[in-house]
Structure formats: structure tokens, C-alpha cells
Length: 262
Image 1 (cartoon, rainbow, N blue to C red):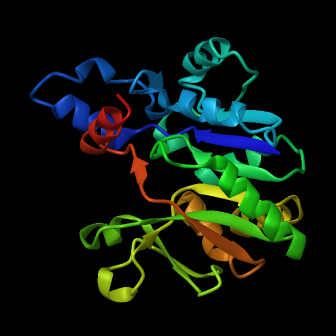
Image 2 (spheres, helix red, strand yellow; image 1 turned 180 degrees about the vertical axis):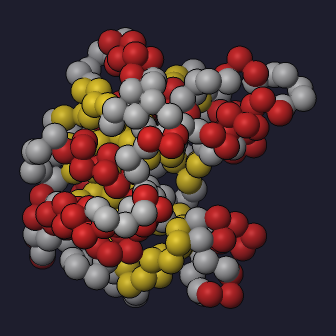
Image 3 (spheres, rainbow, N blue to C red; image 1 turned 120 degrees about the vertical axis):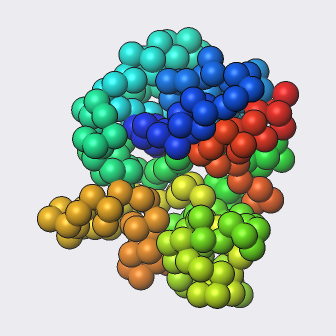
């Protein structure tokens, strides 16, 4: 199984927060890519490497980065005691970005194997069990080789419009994905973090999606949720629930995550 960490973004929102932070406590983090920010005693990405090392199912780890920060990621990868492949999307600024869905495809490196895609700015509580996710995915595979598994996490009422929201049936199958809806547009209070376990048999849907969207504006194929909203209509997609999701997108959420891992 392949693990693809998506780290090609430019973190403009967090960088702005850091520059405007009057306390000055975190100004030393200006310019540090979000996936390399210290969370507790380790860079965020290193927490995922630790998780992968404990799972025999993961045979390949790929981190998709931008060209601007590639050397920083290569230096980080060299410090790991397991092999990490760094792949660049070639962009040097936010305006040149290829979009997260395209980076998912880039992370495959033309290989076709069950793949877990994870946003480089996402982390879960210490009680998160990667083995439990893998076990549930394998169980789904015995019933349908095309089945995929994504995560769901609770979201506060006031934050519904900030996240991709999924609706889930009684048997755990995802029936609907709505990108940043108003609270009145859905009764669901389940957000969908960028953590997708896509089966080998369903990876062609990713390629199909990018081909269908190639002539549309970047917005239509940038956020990974745009792909998930289509995937649920093309193959069975189920949700595995977790207790909490850290989204290191702004200074407040970063501080919360960092302190929880100290």
C-alpha cells in the first residue's frame, strides 16, 4: 500500500496570521511550510512517518511538494530513518499551483496500488488508530474490490460552512458531499478531512476526473473534496469516524494542535 502526503500548498492564511501576531511568539515560524511545522517535539509530517512505520501494510511513502520548498523537504526526508520519496509539482508560487487533486495523481508515480492520500496539514488525536482504518478497509475489500474509505470527524455548528461536509447512511456509506455548506443546507455535522483510502481498482476514477476537469478553472479541481464529491457517485465510499481532526490552517488551530502534542 502506498501513502501519499499532500504538501504542495503555500499556507498563505497561516503565514498571514504569523505576520500579524502581535505577541511575536511564533514569528520564527514565518515561511515554514505547514507540514514541517513543529507539533509537539516533531514536525507534523514526522508524526505520520511514525504511524506508517508501525503499519506493515505501508510499503511506499511519497510526499508531494512545491518546487519553492523542495530543498526543505529533502532535508527533512534525509533526517528520517525510513525512505521517503519527495516529488515536486514544479510550482514556485501559489498562483502556479497545480491543485491538490492533480497532486494526488502525481503522488502515484504511475503505480497502481491501494493508496492512502493525506493532507500535509492534517493530524488526529493521539488515540487515532491507523491500524483500525486499514482493517476496516480490508474488510470492505472482501465485499467489493472497488470500495474506498474516507474519514469523518465531528464539526461544531459554527464551523460547518468552513469544511467539506458528508452525509452518511446507517450502514456507513457516504451518500453526499457538500463543500462548505451553510448549516441550514444539511443536517449532517460530520466534516470530511483529507484522508482517503482509495482502492487500486478505483484509482482510475482519479485519472478520469482530472481528464474531465482539465479545461475547467483550477477551482473546479483544486480542493480534494471536489474529487470525493464525484467519487461517491462512481464507487462505494464508506466513512470511518474519528474523534477529532486538527486542521493546521491558521495560528489558533496550530497552537491548539501543538500544545496537545507536548
